[in-house]
Length: 226
Image (cartoon, rainbow, N blue to C red; front, side, top):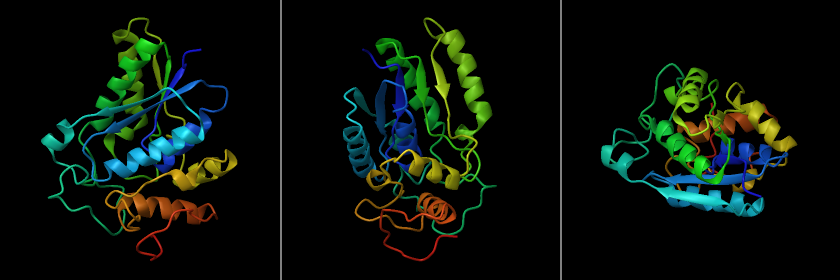
């Protein structure tokens, strides 16, 4: 049978939990993007490992370079340093890739129409996050309104199962689902060993600490995350 759900699997903690959720009564296909980010090869490795873990055969990797050409983000422009330090959720950080999720979702919708999937799952998180504007609930409500008008049958929808959860709640859910956290990768700037100091590492480390669990990956900087 064809997949009924496309899961966007970046390889990070949140998408790892979404992948675990999709094992409950879904027939998932996995979609991954290499968009010129610093840790592209390491993220693809995590994606492949998670897909192999769940034996998902329907998988697609889309390579794009226009984000790198456009620049403006520390994830795609090596001339912009990845910030290390405290997390200020009131300020959109330089790790934001301008309007990235719209491009990812558009590609996912195109693939969904071809394979007949009606659900697209993305691990967007609004609270307790870096504060990216394309992770707000209103954004996905608007996107779903667009899909009702702009797709062949009007039935494709975006699902954001984690959007209202804290990172600690996501960790607890992942542990309940036996999500393969050791296979995931969250660091924005290192590929050999997670730095422990970028926004993504700090959010992850804090989440595991608040959930009362041990993070199964190691960090170059063992200082406790704030």
